[in-house]
Length: 431
Ligand code: HAM
Image (cartoon, rainbow, N blue to C red):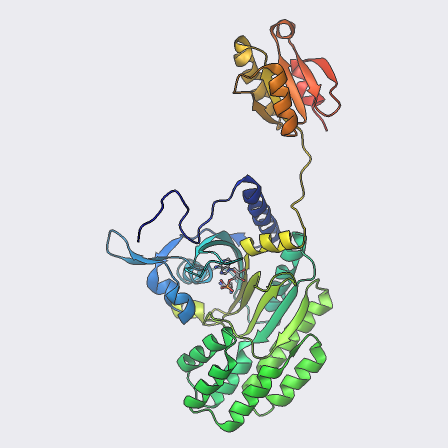
């Protein structure tokens, strides 16, 4: 394929300063939240062994991995998600760490998805995993954190679509349909291809009672918790495992609603996720302005055990930073601008450049954002450039004042200028 190397590779993007600022704002908010909930940050590699990443990612995602052989002949891949890497890290380096283990990661991921609005081949996630507890309070914590992150960046009207893998798997399992076959059905449900999923269940030997149950389940959705839970309970009445799972979901939702949650729940009994490791609740978060999920997660009690042989239940979530950015744009939410002084130091001629350097360093040592005129423009052109870029203060360095240990400080807004002793500068620069 002929490529135009002057363009970014399809699905990859440059972030110009304004977008990079937004991305880092969300990343900072995610990191602050990790501290608030006491999650420790870990950093794992972008490149991992293919087998690790492919183990439980699901057929659709597996097909979209960037896989290649490194120069040492190893079959490696770019990570399409964090969860497999975290499971590896815990299974190999933290098995005996006191439980629960709370881990946070943030970074870029790679999936060969078809590029479109909100879907890129390189994207960013903020990922939280709570490892070691089977209890509903762990699931509730992850949901609380999810809702909190979305509101902390200023998003409104967030909805958490939720279901429990144990309901669908409980039904299919009691019909003797094994996990591998269940996974194929889940992939179809993830794509909302319910007709095909039913057909396949029939091919796999599901009884007509089972098919009727599934059909009824697929129709159940809505936000009225009590009536939805009752309806599901009625439909799955003959499937004890499914009923247990429903109770578990209900308990989690009750817990978190009692604590007060900004996001609203939306129950959808036919909802499944493409990742294969989920064993308990699964969820995705949405804002009304975007029809793609801004985050997703769930409980996965067997993945770490797969790598360690030791039982280690876990629940987690990943929030898509790019999609949060998009949702903020759609809702007209901007990252708050920190109103701080920004200083422009202008030497009025070449002989003052070294002095300008010295003064800039003094200001920066005092934590003041400072830049120096490096284009050697005239004073008036430097000032008009400062105006255009909303610089708050200009410091004009001339030989006459410097001889007296002074400079001219100009407030760019009021245009008021005064002579100030160099040592008094840091205390004079305020907005
Ligand atoms: P996921 O649903 O595959 O879950 O991804 C989570 C979020 O990443 C999505 O909701 C979306 O916001 C973002 N995302 C995914 N693919 C793309 C893309 N191509 N372009 C832009 N954003 C994207 C996971 O990755 C699981 N590891 C979550 C998890 C953590 N489950 C348990 N712990």
